[in-house]
Amino acid sequence: MLAAALACAPLHGAGGDASAGEAIYARCAACHALAYDRSGPRHCGLIGRRAGSVPGFAYSEAMRRSGIVWDAPALDRFLADPMRTLPGTSMAYAGIADAGERADLIAFLAIATASAACRGSAGR
Image (cartoon, rainbow, N blue to C red; front, side):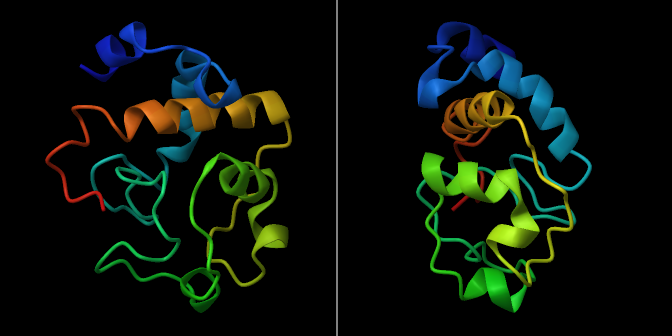
């Protein structure tokens, strides 16, 4: 169903290609899912959400106090180098060096987090 939503959605939202971003999101799936928490928090409702605010998820103190609201520029900075952008984060991931890949991933997240897969989930 998500693939159908991506096929109907503009592919270059947020300056990236959402279809390419879906493949990049597979890397995130080791720790994250759209509709439920894993070792990382769920991504449904991510765009516009305050960092560290998914109820019941055990965030680092740094993330809870960051004041970040997830939009395209904030995600781009964070995804480039999470540990440098937010010292103390528990997201021990080197980041995505390629700006195009980050744009593609952000475009996917913008579409996916508003998709039927997320509607009705406890994503916010």
